Length: 458
Ligand SMILES: *[C@@H]1O[C@H](CO)[C@@H](O)[C@H](O)[C@H]1NC(C)=O
Ligand SMILES: *[C@@H]1O[C@H](CO)[C@@H](O)[C@H](O)[C@H]1NC(C)=O
Ligand SMILES: *[C@@H]1O[C@H](CO)[C@@H](O)[C@H](O)[C@H]1NC(C)=O
Ligand SMILES: *[C@@H]1O[C@H](CO)[C@@H](O)[C@H](O)[C@H]1NC(C)=O
Ligand SMILES: *[C@@H]1O[C@H](CO)[C@@H](O)[C@H](O)[C@H]1NC(C)=O
Ligand SMILES: *[C@@H]1O[C@H](CO)[C@@H](O)[C@H](O)[C@H]1NC(C)=O
Ligand SMILES: *[C@@H]1O[C@H](CO)[C@@H](O)[C@H](O)[C@H]1NC(C)=O
Image (cartoon, rainbow, N blue to C red):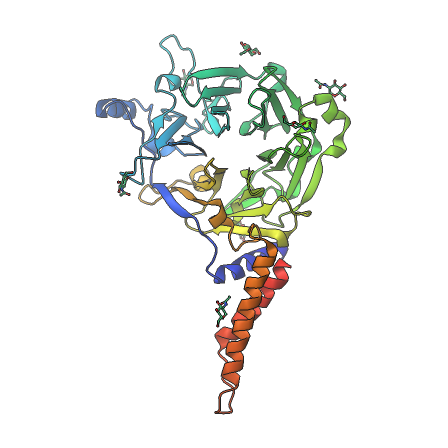
């Protein structure tokens, strides 16, 4: 019922025609790669080292002219799991992916040495010019033949594309069921940088200190899946997922110089937060379980995968996978309530499974949708567009939503004026000499709608 209410609220605002400001920048029916030559591509297809339908884009990141895209090796036939496209090349809206940093980093040696990069899901470019790649390390986990390498964090210098570091997680921090898919990087200080990697299989966060070149594993019951939130329904596919901690979004530095990590399990309706002061010190985290806070609920049916905080506006963006939508919440709000969450974009065709969200260093919001449940439980139709990348300046994306950063008094003035004008026009219609009142149903609806919006905002 409450979930239904959320939908109605979101739908009503939609009538205003002032939301859904994102536009589609890239779209693909199927993923293809920039092979060294047409012969190399043909050979890859013949040898099954490239099986197009097994390639699904999962994560995105933007740095200067590069838009990075990960393609996990869930199934065989993925030639390169970390790639980019050149944002300056506007010759096509379905560009071929270029392996990053090179083809060599993705190929197995003659002597059987595994590739430098195995299977990343999500990545992060920090403000210090480093690309942090969280490598899940598993090949073929949706097929019968799984090959497991230890998960790792691989860091590249984005200016030179050189490998800076590959940090393999110590054995005691990787469990039998571990799965590392999401990473957040606290880059307030380029030397004393911390990376937070979520373990969705065996609930935990592995914290890595760049300065110490060391990691540790933090556990908390808020990282666990909610057994009452494991049912999903996307485009007619019903399934049950028990994924634990998933969305990881870092605020900018607080006055104490620590950030706030906003997080939620995939199987959950709730949002949580903790200061990185506790994550940075294992014993501090273990001795202060109360430092982890429940913020509130998104409402039934509102499970979320990826999330991201835009540090300039302080707006938290998050996907709503069952609703084919992306929503937002201003972190300056005291409470995480349904009424102060806004809708950024919702579409049952183009936004099926929003899988990653980022804001680049030029204040643009980027979203990738990939229809993953259909790919996983059925099959994608390669005559249709299946993968889309959306973008818009953050200020446009949040304008006229509950996350709008226009001062509240300005918004109120605007609405009060509109109401006044609408009332005037009704008065004008009631007044005419004819005597009989002719009120346009549209203007009545408009007044009702606007007064409702005012209640909603105030
Ligand atoms: C592509 O970019 C070039 C230079 O940036 C510009 O001159 C050209 O008009 C663009 N073409 C399209 C189709 O947008
Ligand atoms: C399973 O993987 C191993 C190592 O990659 C490979 O040698 C073997 O042929 C694979 N088996 C099947 C059935 O695909
Ligand atoms: C970081 O630690 C790992 C072992 O945990 C070691 O192999 C690696 O060389 C270290 N890297 C640096 C840059 O110190
Ligand atoms: C799938 O789930 C939806 C929503 O929970 C429900 O309405 C529908 O009946 C379910 N379909 C099947 C085939 O179980
Ligand atoms: C936060 O960092 C700044 C710059 O490094 C420093 O000047 C300030 O004293 C720090 N504040 C606290 C509370 O540590
Ligand atoms: C972690 O916090 C404890 C207090 O709980 C403190 O004694 C210890 O020095 C801290 N460790 C580090 C590395 O800061
Ligand atoms: C209300 O009407 C006045 C003049 O009729 C106009 O200048 C103003 O822009 C209108 N305000 C809004 C919010 O539509």
